[in-house]
Length: 272
Image 1 (tube, rainbow, N blue to C red):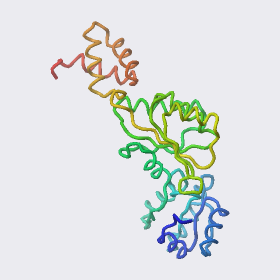
Image 2 (cartoon, one colour):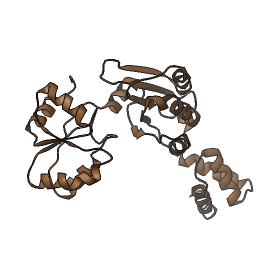
Image 3 (cartoon, rainbow, N blue to C red):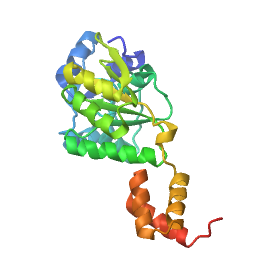
């Protein structure tokens, strides 16, 4: 409750209605604040069907406040469709700064704060999650160097950390932050491998953020390095197809992209 900014309280008091994920959660908050307001549920399962009614209310000049159960609306929470619809209709919207677990976890992680990449929740199924992490690792090998922030559910934390250790390496520095700004706030900083081992035996509760540090310079394979490896492979007598396949495997790049570059190199003098 102490995180609620004065502007948010004033906005809630002045609103004709409050859009919320769960009326029980928001209702309890408003009661403690002494705010009486009409509550309209807005969540992932009804946002599309609620939009016509809400847009009609806005068109009539009513003032609506959008809140989420915790943290900032739209950040892994409902509201994006509504904001897009309001913008498309030319209706005024505003945002009130407030608590955000992702940014707070980044600050407390001790990892480089900029640039950072916010990924939200990874896919819940392991296969899809591993594919998503492989995509991020491929981006790193293409030159991305940023701290990455994820949200995760407690029952998936250990497996997600295990998959991250496999994708980014067990020695990659990381942090697990949970229950940000709440009574049991906790931040554990260590390597991905050790964090995975810890949470495999120690359960975690509450809302969780994982912050993964950027790849070290030697882990990133930039465009210049890919080009240099291709030139070496082609000069060594490999065919375009074989050179592309070998370099793609060594760098983690997509074979078709490397093959396209190899074709270009065959038609470009070495000094170009």
